[in-house]
Amino acid sequence: MSATDTYLLLRAFCDELARCGMEHACTAPGSRCTPIVLSLVRDRRIHAWSHVDERCAGFFALGAAKRSGRPVAVTCTSGTAAANLAPAVIEARHARVPLIVLTADRPPELREVGAGQTIDQLKLYGDAVKWFFEVGVHEATPGALRFMRTLACRAYWTASYGPPGPVHLNLPLREPLVLDAPLPDDTTGRDDRRPYVMLDRAVESVPTGGRHPAGRVVIVAGANRDPMAGRELAGFAARAAMPLLADPMSGARQGSAAIAHYDLLLRDPEFAAAHRPDFVIRTGDLPTSKPLRAWLAGLDAAQIAIDPDGVWHDPDAVVGLRVGAPLRALLDGLTAGETVPVEPEWLDGWRAADDAAGEALAQVLGDDLSEPLVARSLGKWLDDATTLFVASSMPIRDVELYLPARQDGPRVLSNRGANGIDGTVSAAFGAAATGEGPVVLLVGDVALAHDIGGLLSARRLQVPLTIVVLNNDGGGIFHFLAVAGEADAFEEHVATPHGLDFAHAAALYGCRFERPGTVGELKTAVEQSIAGGGTTIIEVRTDRVENLALHRRAAEAALAALPRA
Ligand SMILES: Cc1ncc(C[n+]2csc(CCOP(=O)(O)OP(=O)(O)O)c2C)c(N)n1
Ligand SMILES: [Mg+2]
Image 1 (tube, rainbow, N blue to C red):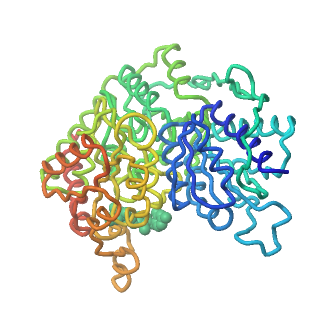
Image 2 (cartoon, helix red, strand yellow):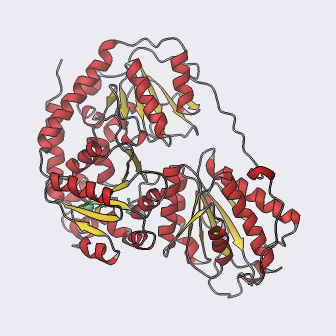
Image 3 (cartoon, helix red, strand yellow):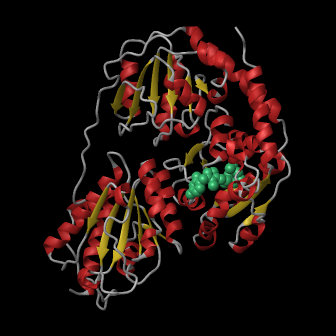
């Protein structure tokens, strides 16, 4: 057993990851992980992004995999380093993001005997990973090389499909950990650069699942991994005159059938009752909106859900049919099948209400910088080459509530698997490191403070990112909850104001800093940041109490503006 064995096996492993399609990996420093790190770095097809903090590395990998739709590897040394990947692994599982976690470990003879930096890493992430495998220590025989190649392909395909998610390989590594001679050639790979094992997926073709949507049909579109599918869905809904209640993360909030303000419309009991559909088609994840969820739960319409992985998003147990197929299969089926009969006035009613609500909102929001106006404006300004990464808490709610329907608007991404505010900055940098076009992060101050170390990617990795922070000095979302009335503990223990001046963070991490006072200045700051490259923190100061009042006024105005029968 020599370093040559270790490195030959790991080179074959990384070779297969690259052949399968891997383009990005994240590393974190340590001694034990040296052979994994060097093997990733030395494979020229894989861009290895170096991180100091494993928690940031995990979220960076998550963001990169989320935007690119391809597995990203993340490696770290043994001990608590591996434990720091847990939050990203959990989010990846819930949000269906393909990650390949490669933890370095001591070999068996050094476990449970007081060797340094050794913890039990077997099944460290529990059920949060789709697959765990203890790789073992091997000599680089032809058989072992084929095993490592197969292992890499299996990890890649398992992370990619059915549904996508994280896998964990634990790699015991014996000293010496660096090479003392050049590596010999390895001819165990397939000819013509193909992966050792390919995956052939039979695509389900049960387009309408035997049900034929008819009458008053509504489409509810939630987060969808394929931005093109969202666009196609919007086109279909417009042609079929079916109201399309589209979460921005569906990529379908566009076209003449898109209903952007469903959250507000469905708060109105009269509207909600008068617009009960006969048939509901749900796609992707269930949107966050509470009024929408409550309305769907109370319908007696037939409800079908289509998702490529057949994901089970139905907390109210009302879906009667699940179609495990890509959205395209459904659209093809509906378009090819009998023409779906629709009442022409059906979409008109939704359209008129949505437009009226939108106009009323615009009036209430006016031109004064506010949290909803920032969300709405970014939706209007950013083009379809841009990705808007949105933090949990009020930013994602504001985007769902206020982003206007728009052809060629930005792609919207968010960590909504487990709704955590952690790792948001790192995940946005990961997204910015992959793919074409700029990334803009919309984030609250607490979420930014939580992952302030993620800003290191700006300095060390030179990844450009435009960060718009809504600084209301605490968790503004909690003002919408009953706990806001618990005066003895609310401010200190729930809202958690901190008084941080993010200009200092910007200086520490080498970012530019802007504090616009008007919408016009904000627009200029965002445009300059995108055009100039680099990372800029653009801070918009707001007030939590005023924000609550503004949300209420906006909702009241929108409801008052609805056309009445
Ligand atoms: C890791 C994690 N810890 C705690 C929470 C609970 N939480 C939800 S929102 C929030 C406050 C977020 O504040 P901020 O980012 O400033 O956004 P705002 O509410 O002001 O819009 C907290 C602590 C969470 N979602 N995730
Ligand atoms: Mg806040």
